[in-house]
Length: 185
Image (tube, rainbow, N blue to C red; front, side, top):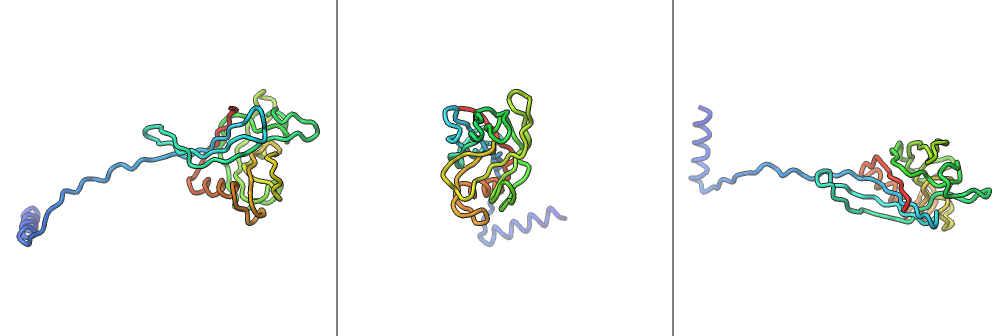
């Protein structure tokens, strides 16, 4: 009975001048993973590059979404900013980090929009670096120095920041970014 009803319905549609369309199943939409990459500059610890990349999960193809200048490390107390085993002075160690939290307006030692990173052991395996973030400094003084975090520029103050730091925070949330890979060029 059911089949007969269907045929009658289609016949009636054809008699009314209707047309039938074959409907293809929807094409498989590409899926992507988004990841932050920070490339340290061995000639200038304040002149690295932070970039967000989109990776096609099927083909492995990579495209850059956004990038900005960023720095990591400082020379306070005569410290070597290139020594990733120097807590609070050396640049961030190479490796892969998990993004553990995002903050629209973090308060404390790090202020304003910030992304918190997992702890990481330094290159010599002697020190575990903790309290690592991607963030900015307020007021912005044009210097890309940090206590081992990744620092980028901003406009405004911590609670109304804009510029690179706000874009970094918004993109991390928007694209649900889970990891950061750090390397030296």
